[in-house]
Image (cartoon, rainbow over all chains, first blue to last red; front, side, top):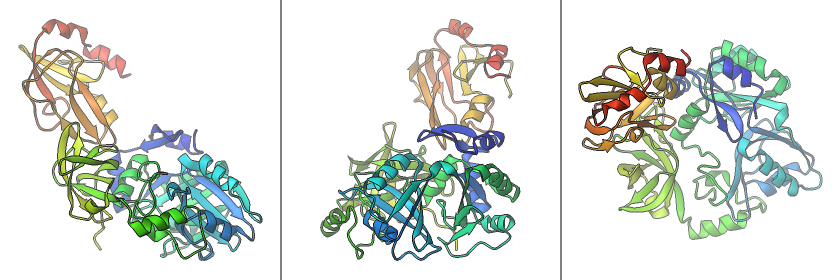
Length: 352
Length: 119
């Protein structure tokens, strides 16, 4: 599949790769350069492959609360939040951003790889008084990220970017939320597919540099933001993933709640730990074995060379007792073990 | 792309410089441009022997690890430090003592390699 920006990527020198069935740019100028651009200036990512669902109706907030971990009823109009959709076992089906457009109208932005599965799950659990529409193909989307994202916002929209994170704005036929996946200031802009090309051009003209999935991955991993399918899975709960903040146990029952309560009472057996390599090593990649006292206890779920830190970084579900910051472990690369330690999240923090 | 005349080339984008019975092996500028951002190279252990086409080393970019194949058979003599800054000079990956110099005939000359990469 191709996003509405496929030709724009080729024109900008994008190197295209397969991502969850989509032909997406992994890089343009180079991952290190694009990473640095987002940390120091501003970059723009095509995130049109992500899914957009619209849900509305008098029962909508309550319905979302029965399916998602965060509290949709408590979400103020004009705001957005991160949430998770779980199976009955408390495992993660998907993580998503929920926008409250109006009292009875929500926009859900879901992972590209899960659009069909999420839509099928939500439709199969539909409530009376809720209208649900998968409009993923109607929209393109851009993520503008970096310390200079505010300048770009002003050039595009003639107004200043809200300082507050997770603010939702409706501009023209598009939707904006001040959020992102890089740890930098910025916004995500959902636009009708027919306007995506022009919006991309305007964003470049305003000073954003095109950035691909490669930099998106190194940026998000430095922040320890999970990637569904790698760090999140139907076999791991948000509590194990360290996402308990986004689970509201005080609201009415939701799918997976009982399993989470049981896990909370017993304490999760494993926790998703951030790992930092302590010596020169090859870049760490997903599925590398992780050793504790010479015994393999896990494999990495994500891994990279951190462009900001200059060392290998990763995440892995470690036994809870070995998941505390400072815990030394080893990561094996092609038969050779490299010393690493559990690090407090995020792995990268900007100087204040 | 720079494709020096004094080297021979493998289809898998390694070059070899032959001096006496020693071959110095690296990867071409084209390959480095394709890989981009090479951040780590893992040369083989000195003393190891290879057949032509064996995996001899690994280079890693930020995104992926790529195998480097030995263009000839022989015993490894020496490994260096860096490769990304000067792909044809300092940036070699290993030196190998040629076991069978006749194999060089199977490698590409600069014109054939240029044709392969569309130059």
